[in-house]
Length: 61
Image 1 (cartoon, rainbow, N blue to C red):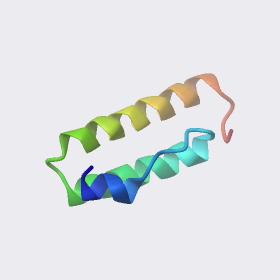
Image 2: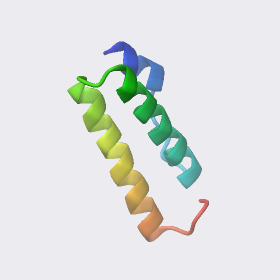
Image 3: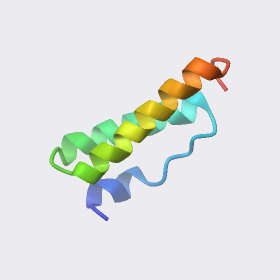
Image 4: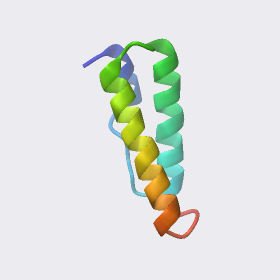
């Protein structure tokens, strides 16, 4: 596991707010490790999860 992934930790996808916070953490980690493909894939998964949540669930949940 890269240092950037350790800093981000395991995302909590229980609420839109936690997804947003996770995404910010991923983006900050990507700035520190722009060539980390695994980190980029994990960040992509967070973006997709947030997008899906915003499309299907009420805002703020």
